[in-house]
Length: 306
Image (cartoon, rainbow, N blue to C red; front, side, top):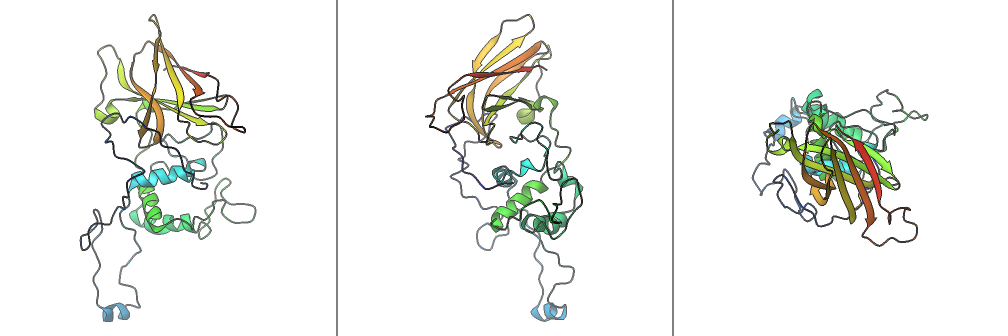
């Protein structure tokens, strides 16, 4: 997890029925309805008289600290902005993790199924703002000074903490997703190129043709290898090679989805698909001195398929 960074959100196309709601312009504070109305998903209130509260020592009998419902989608964006994925793996997610880079923290995949609600509202929330309160022994989790290697995120707002915990609580199952969505990653020049093929069934019901052809979204995430920042304003082309058939060539469109910015196109892949090549560049943006070399060049990553 690192400092928050602002990113450029270019004009984009939303596929698979995603509603065109501006993600950055919205001010959505989950769990806060009109005055006097309960928040969606909120737990029932505890009512107690002041005398009974004092008689119980100032703590209601059976009381436990809890967090109001948060927005997992907002929490996911915060997880990405803070670069939590640099230390904590989440299977099935498409965060810009550098291939082969070791992760310093425990894996978060499926943790929503592994822990009770109290774990997230109490212990896990505390571990974010005060990671030294409880030191869990693990490979590289505790530094030479005897303290957690994780920094304390005390600058988070209460709303951010609530949403971040809501995202982590929402991680259910293995997180592996559909087999077609397994990401493939290559680094060419200054670019980190990650490719996924998401079948239509992941959003609208799985559909395969009679010949085994799968239709879906080819999603390509292009980031700077040096910083992990997404790269808009790029010319991104795809070449799909099927055995015994002509090569198909197309241009990928800028897209914004729940995971952020990427390039993509709706395509069909068959059992005869043998290779997908992604060409990136040159950039359409102005390149100033000090920028990574190669942004004015076209570079190609070739992925064997399937």
